[in-house]
Length: 209
Ligand code: GAR
Image (cartoon, rainbow, N blue to C red; front, side, top):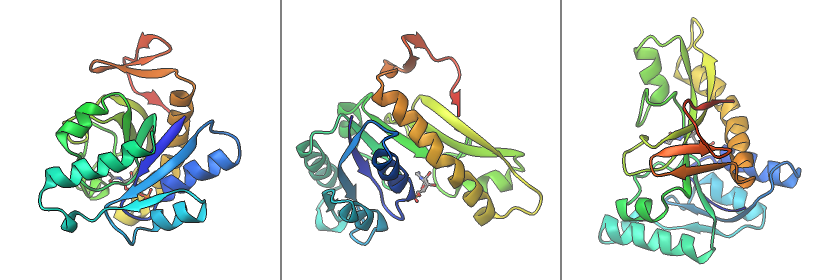
């Protein structure tokens, strides 16, 4: 499966994908990595792997629409089958989200529908959550609101702060994303309207991975 990866920063999820492909446990290829931040470590990781790394700076465009159009033109040029948002920290354009319906996923560091948006670990701690985690979902127009495919849970431990919780969640994000990508690459998951189908049947609860 041809993957385009969108990332704004560190790119540890991208690296997990690249390592899994290299190890032969994910039947996919990353055909381009795209970022809104030219200095993103994710772009260096892509270049080190010999993958086209493309940065488009929002400040170089007059409007949000022009930015989104240029970004997705660049993405379309590498002809991906699936767009993977892996730490991409910008809102996506509604037209592009619509055009990629069922072909774009996002990993989010919370047990959706809890704690959408930013600073999810702080949100979980402030809410007194006993469990926290990460979710992979199909992207729709609603921010972090698309149908959830799979989740991984961690305990919130006494004494946790946002950093310790983020690290525990991140450890689970990588296998969660890889397992989801393996299912997508095997064509076992698809989005039918607003519901996820797994092996041809509606998925009633997110997979717990
Ligand atoms: C990950 O924790 C990811 O879930 C989160 O950003 C981090 C990126 O890490 N994504 C979001 O918050 C999206 N709203 P990485 O760059 O090392 O993969």
